[in-house]
Image (cartoon, rainbow, N blue to C red; front, side, top):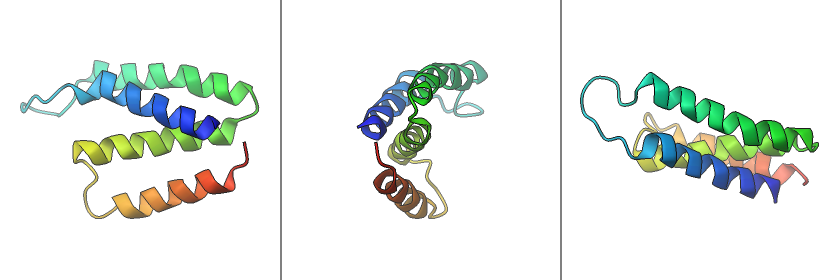
Length: 96
């Protein structure tokens, strides 16, 4: 359950900070957006980890960000499938 919750939190956080910006000039995102994403995600990761669910916190967050970047079209060079499979295997192996 913790993995699913952290996946949802990571997806929502990514869309809140980065998903709305479609500017075409320069870098796709500003520094403040990336820092906001990191700080916002750190809170639920630390909270979940403090409940003895560190592996679930990290796996869920990675899985959520992986799905978000795939939706954004930034999963290039054929790395989406291997990353997805590794995250899925970790999610299955971790017992909540």
